[in-house]
Amino acid sequence: MDFCWITLNVKNMEESLKFYNGLLGIKIFRRFSPNPGVNIAMVGEKYGPKIELICSENNNSKIQSRGISIGFEVKSLDKAVAIKKGPVSPSPKVRFFFIEDPDGVEIQIVENMRE
Image 1 (spheres, helix red, strand yellow):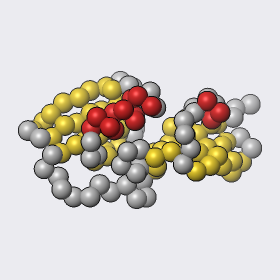
Image 2 (cartoon, one colour; image 1 turned 135 degrees about the horizontal axis):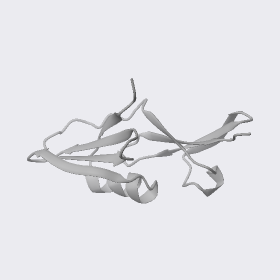
Image 3 (spheres, helix red, strand yellow; image 1 turned 180 degrees about the vertical axis):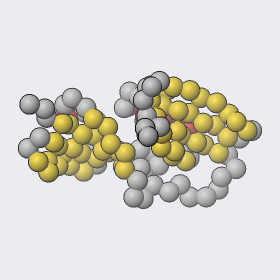
Image 4 (cartoon, one colour; image 1 turned 60 degrees about the vertical axis):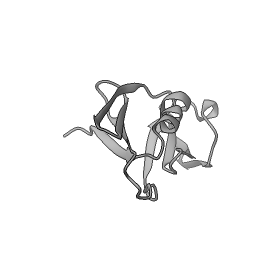
């Protein structure tokens, strides 16, 4: 079994795409509207796991972001973006920090130091 995607409900699609595509550089794989007032964007590589962003004009419920963390690996933390907390190095071969998306989801940026 392979991991396909994680779904995040977002308040503002354009702000979320500015974060995931503009700031983090994750490609927009596909955008579509399955129903009036509902917009979906899949961000990620064609054959890799994706983040499904769903923005619904009729959804008045609070966006749930507590307890969600998504991790991305980078070659160097020193060249990454603004830090919410960290960096943390739980072992000599890994270090990471957290940033936050527009809806409060923690994004973990990980540097794996290979031999």
